[in-house]
Length: 241
Image 1 (cartoon, rainbow, N blue to C red):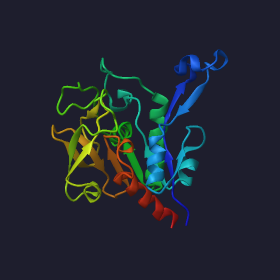
Image 2 (cartoon, helix red, strand yellow):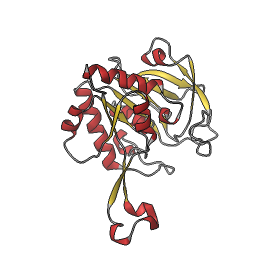
Image 3 (cartoon, helix red, strand yellow):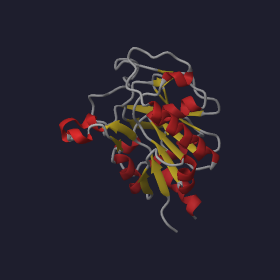
Image 4 (spheres, rainbow, N blue to C red):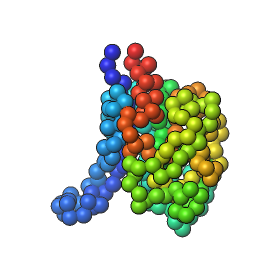
């Protein structure tokens, strides 16, 4: 039996973002960006990571995968949930929004297990009909956008809801990092809240079928192997067996 193949989403940026590291002749090109801690976390949990590109047939790609990670990144376009842009809304990547929503839909249709992280957590919520608070300040609640703190260090704890899938993976209180300036406003239809911060901010949810786990924090930056990645690889492995 081979290791389960876990697909990882990422960003697509203009080469000009790299400044002087790119010669003028290549400045109009684009590059795909995947932070290395995502595949490292998949590998540490026993999976075989593959970094996905948005080129090619989404259904065909997902059909080859045993698991999917929807990774962190830019803010979602608020048009997806019928809102006007907030003045503090960050950079948008509309093409990525559409691509990842299509990946999510294909994975759900094929019962491919999904781990959604930060932006991925927010994208899942919106795809299920939920909404977002587009900006919270660093001094709100427990202080969510901790941009000046090393992301490998926890900044607060979340309380895990008993009798959930998440509770089978994590203890009742779990230390997490905090690298997001948006939060869930209305939870999407059918999603089960599985973790919250002490200020009430939703930090985790899951689906009743146990095939989707979503967290607001960045587990890939914390100690490896991480329980959420271990869950994903274990569930993906059942497709290989």
